[in-house]
Image 1: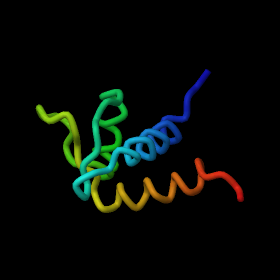
Image 2 (image 1 turned 135 degrees about the vertical axis):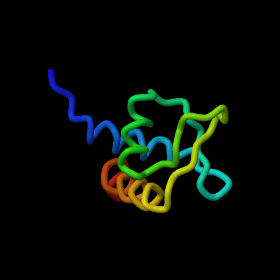
Image 3 (image 1 turned 45 degrees about the vertical axis):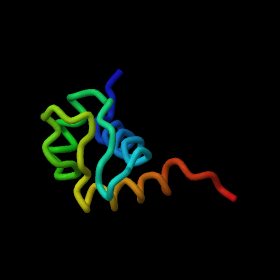
Image 4 (image 1 turned 60 degrees about the horizontal axis):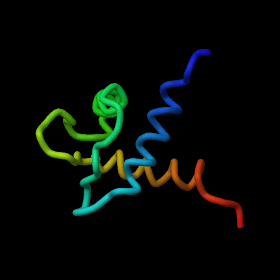
Length: 76
């Protein structure tokens, strides 16, 4: 099976955004390969530090909100 890593990254970003606090901070309990790819895409700031959280870029926040609405909202 071949996984679509872009879809995985989208889901991870959306899930990370659910813990959004202090403006742009999220908890970083997610696979390092995913956070590395999100960093390379410019959606999060550099993830490799001693903090237990990381920062989404403005683009990351906007994309996370779009993904949440598109992929995870229920039809009313």
